[in-house]
Amino acid sequence: MGGMSERMTSARLRDQSIHGLSLADYGRLSRAEMIGKLRAYAEHERARAQAVLEAKDEDIVVETYVGVIVGRKLEEVTQ
Image 1: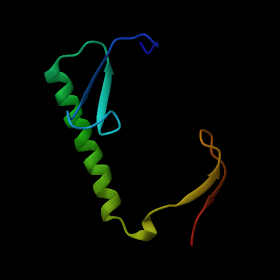
Image 2 (image 1 turned 120 degrees about the vertical axis):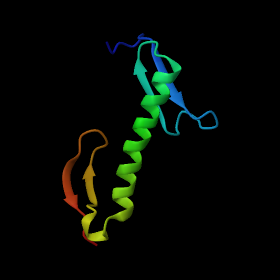
Image 3 (image 1 turned 60 degrees about the horizontal axis):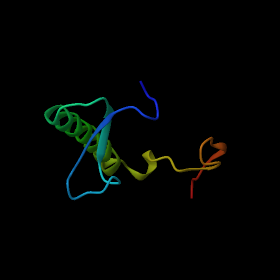
Image 4 (image 1 turned 180 degrees about the vertical axis):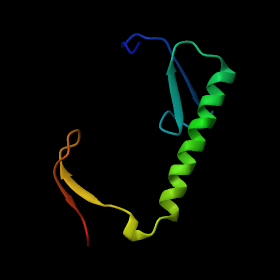
């Protein structure tokens, strides 16, 4: 599993591009299965978003670092 030519199935809202909330999985899955997976993923994302929206500023960590893939020279931004 996981090759460049594997069959994939994806799900997204019709009016959103691939850059909207979408989900893909390996294999040829049914419409119902993918809708269920997309909705479960959306619930997970909603919980994560709600945690950020409800957090106090002091509970949010802001950091700066060098490198896009591997972060080096990590420093917390306090101001």
